[in-house]
Length: 411
Image 1 (cartoon, rainbow, N blue to C red):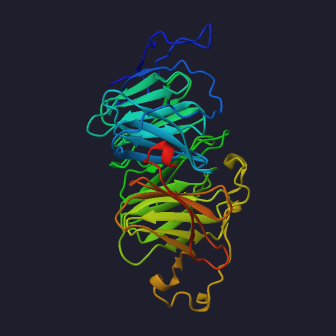
Image 2 (cartoon, rainbow, N blue to C red):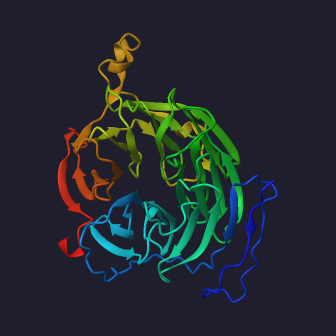
Image 3 (cartoon, one colour):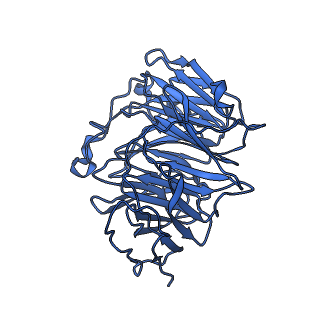
C-alpha cells in the first residue's frame, strides 16, 4: 500500500512561533498521493492587491484556464506565461504574475479574495509539474506548500478549510492547515476534473462523478452521508452546486437537457431544455438565490432558465434542514392539461433569456452582483456583462465588453 508522507517545508517565514509537527495519516488510504509539504500559512485576510508593474508583452499570452472565485466577484486566468486575477464589477485587472522561465499555468483556483491560491502547471512549457498542486501566497509571491501525485492533476477546488484535488479517477480531500489527507474517492474516468463543493463554513457538500456512466456522487460531510444519483443515461459533461449544496444541476454529453436535483434525497426537481440538437455544455451556474440557472455551450448561446424550485434560505446549514424544504413550484404551462400526451420535447421548459456569442468558442458563465446580470468569460479573452429581462425574457442586452488579455493600459 502506498502511503502519504508529510515532511517539513523549507525554512519560510513562519507566523506561528511553535507550529505543530507535520503528521502522516494515510494508513487508511490506498493513495495516489506521493508526498505533501504542509504550508506555513499566513493569515488569509481579504485583500485587494495592486497590479504588478509589468511591461506589456509584444503579443497576447495564450489562455490555458479560466475560472470564477466562489462568489463570482473575481475570476482567474492561467496563461502560458503565468496567471492573472481580475475583478468583475467593476471590471479591472487586480494583479498579474508573469514568470521568467516557463510560466505555463493550467489551473488557478482562488479562495474568495484572500492571498492564497492553488496553482498547477500547464501548457507546452509548464511553470510547475502537472502532477503537483502548488499553494501560492501572493503576499510572499512564492509557493508555501505543495501536494504531489503519481498522475496529472485535473482540477482543484478550495474551501476555507479544505483542499480538494481531482485526478483522472480519484478525488482527494485535504485539511488546508496541515495538508493532512482526510478522504479519498474513486470515480469513473474524469478527464475534465469535474467536481463541485459547497461554500458554507459549517458544512461541506462535495459532488463528483460516480463509478458508473451518468452517475454523480454526493458527499454530505456534516451528516456523514453519501448519495448516488443516476442523473443521465450518457456520461456527465458538467454540473454545478448552489452555495449551500442543496441543489445540483447536471448535464450530459448529449447537451440537450439540464436536470436539477435535491442533493439530500436525490429527487429530480426540474428539467430544462437547452435545445434539440447535441451540444457540449461548458458551464452551469446558479444565481445566488437559486431563482435562475445559466448555461453555456459550444453552440455559442448562453441561456438563462427560470427555476421553479423553492429552496428556502440558501444560507442555512443543510444538516439542520428537512428534506421536504426543497419542492417544485406549480408550473404555469398552458400544456399542463394534456400532460402525458405531448412528446417530452414539447413538455420541456425552455430558456427565458439568451445571449448570442461566437459558435465554437469556449465560454464560462456566472451571475453578476448587479440584479439580473450575467458575466461571460471566453477563452478568446472576451469579457461580457449582460442583462436579462426577468419578466419578458428574450435576447439579453450587452452592458459591457472587454478583451482582458490586452495590455492593462487598454482597459
